[in-house]
Length: 255
Length: 329
Image 1: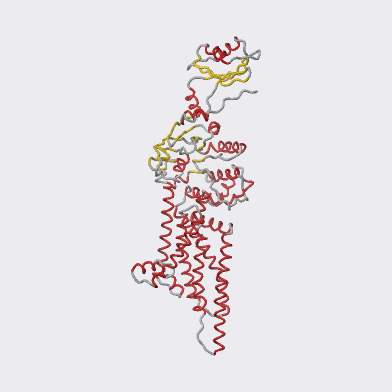
Image 2: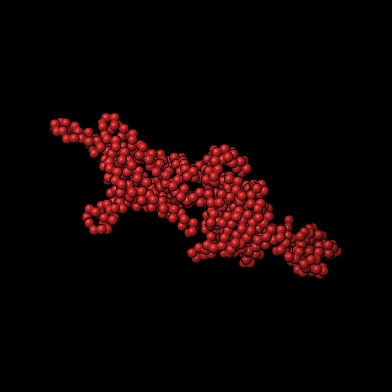
């Protein structure tokens, strides 16, 4: 356990010393800010139009801003996650520092968990930024905080799953660009697999759609904790980390 | 301290290490010698639990590398060929991180970091980024990293590669300094290094063990018959090498006379005598009686380099043979 924290702290140190973290934070803040601004503007304009027409449709911050906004966050996440995970193992392999880790009295699992946790913490710090914008909604409106919290839990679970996959892919190569690009494509496909259900209703389509991380996100973003969706994400996390440990093991037999 | 039995590492198509066996006692400095690609690094990686052996066993301090890797890793300090450093970390920060990984904590950790910095003469770069350090400093940081947890065994893969001569000497001294407290294995393809630092040599070639012995024994073994180098000069500026050669061949006990070099009226000659016969006195007398000057007479100890080439294959002997000492002009 102690070793896991040692590794995790070292990874976080690397993220923040080598500017990766700041660049990601900036890019994320810019993208998120744009989505927030457009959604908020549409909401305000709609509200004013309704007042002028004298109609009184219920306006809802949760439904009209927060939900589409957090959907967008999960999409921005697709771009951020490969950038976070690509260096985790590829860089160690390129630097030769993997030899240091592998010859230290540390379990592979501790190394993997430490790195994955560091990636998750960095992702969480991106999510923390969104709080700044949402604080204004709470200041001037009365959104319900409970579905919001559930949606954030969903975002974390989804990111955890994709980060685990990215961690695994990073063990396969010494080249960060390859690791990043491969992770991006895999994450993207996992995101859009759900689309096949739109035109195909045979079993394979349902299976494919089930593997999509986006379909399992719907319930969370609506504010519902669905056990089967949570289990799906946890399964992907465990599988991803398990494959990572297998890959590390095979690294030793091959190299 | 280290016991290796029929250790083998096979890859898909090649056998990198082929049934190597050796024992290393506590407190020894052992040179692990072989040409590039001989399997030195692979063997070291197996000893450090980085690679699992395909067959055979290796035990460090009584623990098997396959069965109790964590116990082995606790007792080993390892410096790979390229020091495993994170360029974005500061020296002291890096050593602290490694110390923690090796199980140190608290004031103990701080003490060991200071000790390692002191020992490896890197205290002046404690606050510098590793990526900005020169090759020599990085190598020393690598060494500091290896000794941080005071391991019983130090495994150093080419610790002096890429250093300048001054740094090489410093590193060698440092390794010798470390010797009393640690059992050290260092790999190299540079022979003087072994002659200067090690007591024991293990020579491998193409994955096979060629010889394992003390440096002194190896030299004696390879020499067999005694050989002597003579530098002879003619008095009047004329000296015919064949005549000298002929003259010396007649000295009793001489088995072979070889003219190595001739410059003007000086010749450098190597004389091999039959085993167990001392011919130096007779040789000197013969030279003086013939009316020549005897400038130099010394035993030609075989360098490890020659032994090495002799043991690791003959094809490279001619090309790689070191030039015998040149005559001063």
